[in-house]
Structure formats: C-alpha cells, structure tokens
Length: 323
Image (spheres, rainbow, N blue to C red):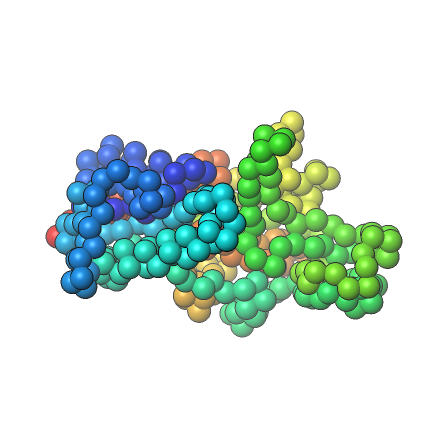
C-alpha cells in the first residue's frame, strides 16, 4: 500500500498525485496532519516500539510513503496562545512518534517535518562550492552597513531569510504571501531606523529570464520564466500579473548544469525540491535558493512534464518492489 502524508489545505499537488495513483491502478491512502487531532477513528499507539494503528492503517501494510507537508502553520488548536503553543508541541511529539512507526527505507522522499533545512546562506555556500555563481548577499540589522552595501551595488533587493510563507488574511479575505522586493536608497534613508529587524539583502542582478527547476531523485524538470520585461514581475515572478501572464516554456539544461544541481542536492541532503535560478544578461546562471517543499504544478502543467503522473508511477513501482 502507498501512504500519502499531506495537509488538507493548499495542497493541490497531493490531490493530483492521489488521483493519478488511483487512475493507474495503485492502492493508496492519504493522511492529513490534522486528522491526528480531529479524526473520530481510533488512534492506538501501544508501548511496543513501532506498533500503532490509525484509520485502519497498520505500518506493516505500508510499502512506500510520499511526504508532502503535514499541518498548516496557521492551524489553531486552541484560542489561548499559550495553550495553543503547548498543544502544537504536543502534536509535534505525537507526529514524531507516529512517523517513527514507519521504516526509514519505505519513505520515497525523506520525511521533512523534522528535518532542519539549510538556511539560504548555507545553500549559497554549497551552490558556490559546486560551481554556481551566486549574488552578493548581506544579512544585517544596521542601517549604515546597508547604505554601504547599496552604494557598492547601486540596486539591491530584500527577501525572507527563511522560506516563502503564505497565509489567509481574514479581514480582507485574501491570500497573502512574502516575496522578493527591490529596496531604494530613499527608503533606506527615510524609512529605516538605525537598527531594524535582521533582514537578508542581495545585489540585484539584471536577468534575461529566470528558471524554476523541480528536482526529483536525480531528475531535473526545468522551466524558463520570461518575467524580466514586465515591471510587476521583474523582481519576483510571484508578484503575478494575471492580466499579462509571463511566458513559461520548457528549458534544456546542459550536462554540466544538471551535474551541478545533482551535486548541490546531494550535498544539501535533499531528494526533492524546487530550485530558483536566474540567467543574467551575460548568460550566466545565478543560483538563488531551493525550497525543499516548493510547488511543482506550476512547472508540470505549462511544460507538459506530467510530474505528478511520473511520481505516482514511481510510487506504484516502489509499492510492488517492497511487498
């Protein structure tokens, strides 16, 4: 049996993979993180190591596991903030035990819920080590240092130190998200205090196009995004222009570039992930970052890669091999 671990919201990718498994004749079940809390089915964890039952699922019946997120970060267990914080820790510990009931060798991709992902600065260091060009980067809370950095490069951007985050804003009923933005000298001098919350800044690199590459266990699925000529998407294509969408097409990496990506992912201890790379005006590929849990439907659909179908097929094959 194939077991899918996911979350119940904002996880269209898991929906499609599950449907493909069913279409291809596979046997799969899905568990969303909050079912450990809300489900009315019996949860039974005995005092014997690796002995549990949940939703009529026994670990011994599971031959392969696909992990794709687990519990939405905004999920509230209790309205009291302190109680909610405590219950989330309890849930984390419960999840830790639950996942430990499944043999490591059966995971198609490593269970990332407990994995400490590399910081962006660590990612950049590894990318440089394997031969990629990287942008000049500064993390600081000091206005004077930032002014010096700006004068050195003339144009800089600010981005999250951690991964991109999205959340639902109830008052406006809109889905909000973090993104990369250009920051001006006037803004630095007029808006920022002498010391501010530590933030990540990079030299802005004028690009021809950017690449979103989904990597799955040694296979690269690259897509070129022509976002540079649209002012709205020039800095970050996630600032989508729905009136004038960017052109997205399949892209061919060189043998050397594929090798660099494989080395980077191996050194980063990642089996899957979405990489962001830009092509400069000088035709050099500049590594930006990798999101271990980045969406790949946006690459699969425009490029006709059918990534979800391929993963479903791989899971079914693993299911048969591990019986």
